[in-house]
Length: 275
Image (cartoon, rainbow, N blue to C red; front, side, top):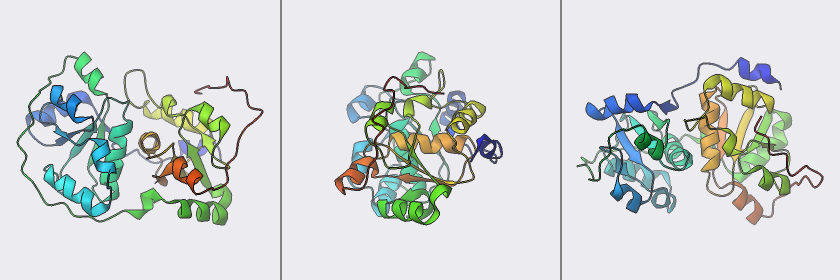
């Protein structure tokens, strides 16, 4: 697999929403804005009209039926446009967006900035929770974007080089221990100067330099609950890649199941390069 695989990737779907675009959508009430931060942070101030969905609440039971119920209670129906944000470089928002996508919600994107950046640009904020009209949301899981440990093992065993495992933890964690055959793509390398993700061409170059292209199935994982790898999932989508799955339970589950791991004992631990 080479960089040309990335260059041949198709048009990227809408993964992020520009802050100015969201301002317009807030004015005409054409999107539900979801704040993924803690309740105390949300109550202090948030983007106007935003509803609060702390990631911890979602992860306490992220079964499709419960998630559909939560979405409906926040005024999100099957066709509602949703924009999710956080103040954690997009990781929390990504996990919520991916979970909505998994239950079949197609129109969900990430705000392209953090909340701190939103405020630094002088954008409006609010401290009042908006009125919400509950809606019905169905649960129609999309298994093609999920990887379980069983799926991962079988995919690697059956198709070998056609499957690329991508480890999105800190580089040092990867060097010490990772799933055998994984490629290191630290989450910190994904951001742009003032955005949660690099621009499309820059992202394609980053992925190509690691041999990550659309010619293979890509499975992302991180430390425990799929936040960092959720961000990577959307980073790869932004570059036009399409055959991507998230190993939601990630390395924590892999180790607890006593699955094989690999290390790079002779690696240069100062090699934390982004490029």
